Image (cartoon, rainbow over all chains, first blue to last red; front, side):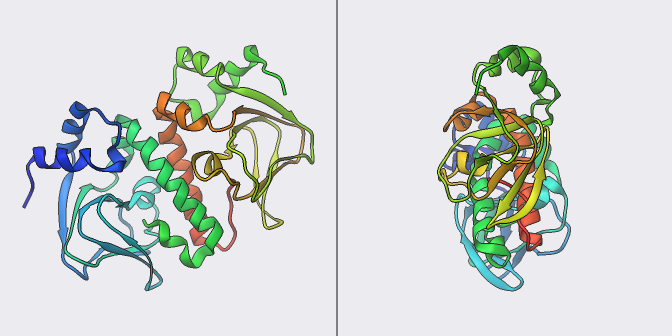
Amino acid sequence: MHASDADVHTLLGSSALFAGIPSEELTAIAGELDEQHHGAGDLVITEGTDGADFFLIVEGTGAIEVGGDRVASLGTGDFFGEVGALDQGPRTASVRATSALRSLSLPNGRLRGFLGDHPRVAVNMLHVSVRRFRVAMTSGRRTAGRGAQ
Amino acid sequence: MTVLRDDTLPHLQSSPLFQTFDDAELTAMCDDLCEGVFRSGHRILGQGMAGMEFFLIVDGTAEVDVDGEVVATLEAGDFFGEVAALGEGVHTATVRATSQLRCLYLPNGTLRSFLLEHPQLAVTLLHQVVRRFRSVVTSAAAPAAG
């Protein structure tokens, strides 16, 4: 089931990740994104496995798990999967849906080109990634996956 | 610390961080950048201390230490200071010159607005930050600077 591009446009417009992006550009972006639905308890991405999809949560909640332990919660407007999507290595954490979870996603490896086309999104994402890096630096490896990915 | 504007452009042209920009854009950037020359052994930023400069090394070497332990070395083309400059303004690591070190830097707090003016730089920085994040979460040692 896929929402209309107009609906996706509205979701993007209210997301911090897409703050500052002109409306016409959001329209183009809406046309590039897939939509995924996961049920409560489903694994969306799995630590240690390959995978380069990138996700933005538009409805529902998720949990980041490292070594089977929950290290952080995610909700509407949060993104995950960027580490695997940008450097192509295995996932550094799992993300599990903790309610019905609706996400917009960029398929395997497409995030790199997407950011080149829409660099303002990279500015927004960079601020969050730097925060996640700081958490990883200051709280050590065990809770580092708190960043998500 | 002196601004040597004539010298700045070639450094930007040869830096991996600025490969996506043409000369006109790089020339405009030169006005925003300061230059610093630090003696070997001098500390450029200190873990736990406040500061929001963003540094790009153009010549020389430096080491990054966290809690007194050296976790990485830096050389021409490497950058540091982004974690504090984009976050809460407190450095997550100490960076010390291990030779005479020449840097271009964006002064206190201007990285944010600089990125909005030159968003392609954020794309390149994001890749590096993500790589550093992976290194930290997959090894006990922390390899990057903040």
